[in-house]
Length: 210
Image (cartoon, rainbow, N blue to C red; front, side, top):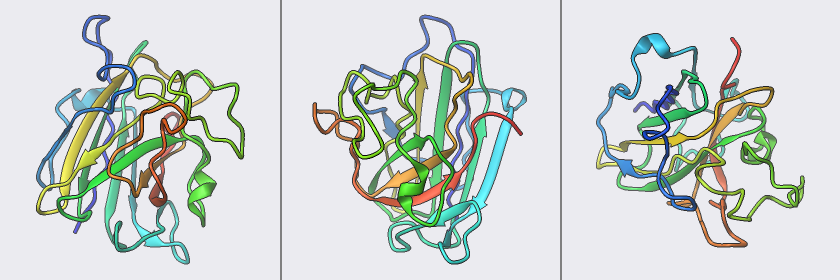
């Protein structure tokens, strides 16, 4: 089984940008193994990371913290192609549990031996009330236009895809990893916004740089 995580960022117009209504999770669709992103031509990809999930004792850049939900040996691939003022992100998976939802987000730190090592969700505008022991749950900040949410539902073969567009690109701060969570969808209500349960897998993947 193979998991591919592909994120594609592309320049879009002011009318075309946007990943749905504020506070609503991105739309999801199913796709088969080996699917490739159609949102941006390959020439726009500026960053690519590939990792194979392994248990923490032997993992390098791709970690599984729950081998049942995120099997060891699954492959994750990340592609980023920054635009100017907007970023389109697409996620493809192959080899997760079949017919199951997963909440997936960009996080601020690289993966580590525990899921917590990836830090909080990346936020373009940071929640001033949040802190190391107090994740942001204010939907003003914890929403799919200020963070990068990639909720999806797999098909009968464990494959799926989802895409979102956020109205920002990256400057001095950029995500450093992608975390797969145990919940089937990201919460949106005040006090719970952005919550998605435990972290089952992580790919270290800086969104900018080499």
